[in-house]
Image 1 (cartoon, rainbow, N blue to C red):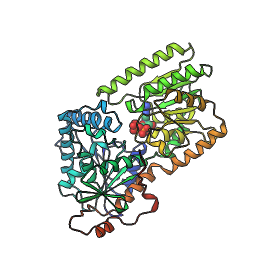
Image 2: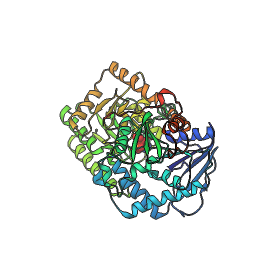
Image 3: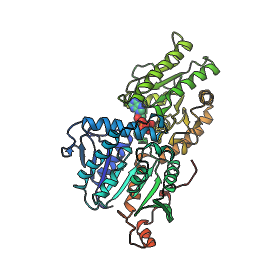
Image 4: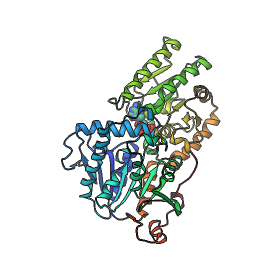
Amino acid sequence: MTGRLVVVSNRIPTEAVPSGGLVVALHDALSEQGGLWIGAHPETGDPDAPFEEIGGAPYRRLAFRLSEADYENYYLGFANSVLWPLSHHRVDLVEINAAYTAAYLAVNRRLARRMAAILQPDDLVWIHDYHFLPLAAELRALGVGNRIGFFLHIPVPNITDLEVLPHPPDYAAWLAQYDLVGLQTRTDVARCLEIYRADPRAEFLPSCAVKFEDRVTRVQSFPIGIDVAAFRADALSAGSKGDGMEARANYVIGVDRLDYSKGLPNRFRAFERYLQDHGTGDRLSLVQIAPPTREAVDAYRRITADLEYIAGQVNGLYGAFDWSPIRFIHRPVPRDEIARLLRGAKACLVTSLADGMNLVAKEFVAAQDPDDPGVLILSRFAGAAEDMTDALLVNPYDHDAVAQAIDRAAHMSRDERLRRHAALTEVVERTDVRAWSRSFIDRLSRLEPGLLLRGRPLREALARFDRPSPPRALRLSTKPT
Ligand code: ADP
């Protein structure tokens, strides 16, 4: 493989030894290949200042600053109050505001200018997530012809929802400027292709490529995973921290950022339904760990109040002086402690209403004792459900069904738990985050950089574009959504 790897992500790790699955995988790839990691500095500052070097890594880390206004309008605004709700099928929460759109485009344009000045012709550029949808378009406008890949960590919006964007045709046009668009699931690929199918500027080519005006892009699923070995080690190493919850205790668990996409009020109501329908004899608790995020956005403040209300109501109605049905922990919990709590739970509730992948589902499986595993209850609307079909798959809107799944998990035979866990472990190991990053980089590096079809016979152009790749790499599907 030639050339440097240039990674762009919203956050850039600032510590010497990074932690967290995705960060570790990118750190490994950069350490191996050499290159740059570009991202927003965790603190706001002068947006026109040059990149700041963050030392301490075997590759260069370059941070740019967002101004306070950028943070408001680009990060909290367009990224998290337009693109996030849009992509999680919550158009009712989208806040259209001209200042958000302008800041989103301006931050991407500014970053593109800065990057264009330092990119070398054979650099392989890998851009991450919804904060940077237009970055390739801005780079192309500056004449950057490098191979540029994009991975979207969240779902692709439904085609009809795109109409809430200030300028809906942009979504397809932005993505088309990437040589490779990586998505979490085959369903996301189908959604993305549907957007192109409806766009008069797009044309489907052989070998599942999409020609958009004079460029060709590939859309392919690369389901992300976790750092399996590290998470297992965390689950085993952490000792009791005196919170009274010992291994395999009588609780089911949820671990989420406090986000409306995670379906937490539905989960609490489903747990209430479980208590109503199945009684309190089992003295099962729901432990919900959900630290606050993005509290500056209204929609996030509202869920906290909702959850506190439901937990109070359920505990008041069903609790006893020595037992609380819902234990709502509304603060950050260290990673090794989470791993240990996952290991000790009878079941994990991952009941998102929409989710790109949901790594907690994979972490729960990795954390289990293989001789006495707990049960994964997984929403059909989480990306993880596409491959983790041996979980108890549920419709998170159906409180009865979730309540039944909780009862079934709490009483499931050891044989069935072992069988389901073995099948899920196979999926979790196969999609380990290092294999994920390797397969994306490998696929991108095989593509011809900056292909322009104009003036070149189609067959010849495609032959150059589509060099052979290993058979498993192409997972494109037209499965209906
Ligand atoms: P999202 O990226 O939307 O937050 P994921 O489930 O894919 O959802 O990833 C969440 C990550 O954050 C997981 O690695 C999980 O362990 C971690 N996490 C979630 N909740 C907490 C928490 N309360 N404290 C610390 N880490 C958390």
